[in-house]
Image (tube, rainbow, N blue to C red; front, top):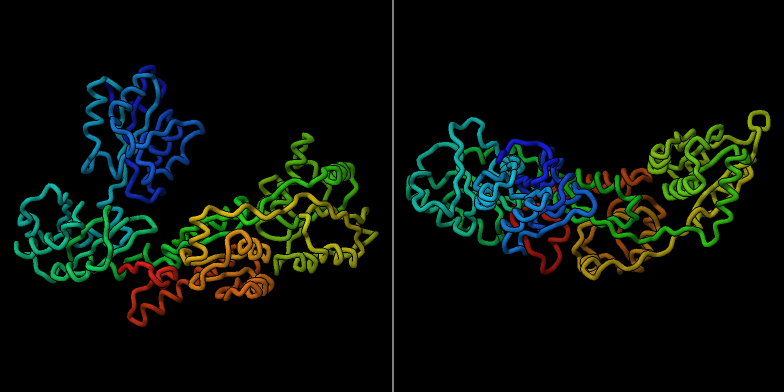
Length: 526
């Protein structure tokens, strides 16, 4: 048996015990991600680490360790059968390990295995809480509360003491440390759900643990940090102070449209949830698009104008159907209405020749569009592959500039099916902190399929027309982007969240998310 091999190419099978880290899926190591991508079987606590399955290939067998009674036997059996098994473990597999028996079972069965270190909560949670455990202190000690009978040995040090599995006994631990000589004024931080957007931290002292934890609702997994390093949290806290930290934000768009927006919201600390309000479907009859693609290839058009990423997708799919690629755009001028549409074109291999320099809309595009000049333009026709419900303003504007337009239905937009009941209840009951409306249709469709957002929910809109529609539905508009782009909308919401947080701190209050202000919401100290 060898534990140092690095590939899965072995007839006897293989087990990798991979540290999943403390909770933030972004803290998985590169080695761990690589092993997951090659696994035949993954054994994990699905509720805690299910998000990491995105690294796996399609068809991987998933075993939920929380439901499987004999994980060791299953792991060994799969490996003996020649399969590559990844066993995901909390934190670091060898740091207060709970899988020692599983490793021993592999060794006894002579199954080849590897142990991949993970980021341990003892360091990661402190870092995410803004506590520099080993800075300017002579000692850093980590203990498991379930293994300690006498706390006097841990009360004499002057450095940082990190305690695992101690939340339920936090008051008793505090008293024991004081009785053993640690000053009752010693700073203490208790951090729950560390490194995730559910993280929250109570800062107190050994002498005040009982009253300060009384209404905090702390649960495991959590860490207790004792020592002067806790005092640096005010200056170094960076995670819980993100402008939208922990905000549950509803993004009512299609999956293709919301990818960049979702990542931006996550960078602000938010928890975005995508709820499609429209479904994009092919035209009822394909002949119009077929003729347009033929005309595009045969030189019928001078320009092709794309007003959405969905239009780019529809044309691209038609190209693939006919065995064409981006080279078919050679000699054509291409316009894009905004950043998202331009990105879709670039991914297709086409760089737009024209984009609005100001407002990203049909009006903004028209402001940049050159008038038809028979001396410069050999062809005066423009192809507009668009949605079935597109407005006529772009066609009218181009016609005034002397161009002839083929306004072609490239796709249809229909109202999506209602979201699951828990999502509908959260929308109407104030479970979301904010909702982003990127068009008037998203307002109409969301209200139509799920109901009106609760009045505590922050309503953010992309522009004046969307604001008008929201108000027509009785919604209070709190945030409006300074320019009509999804990126600007997310930034405007982040600025709003930052101001709300600053106002609460200035008033001496604990910052709370909008959903925590509704009647009956649980209030948690931070």
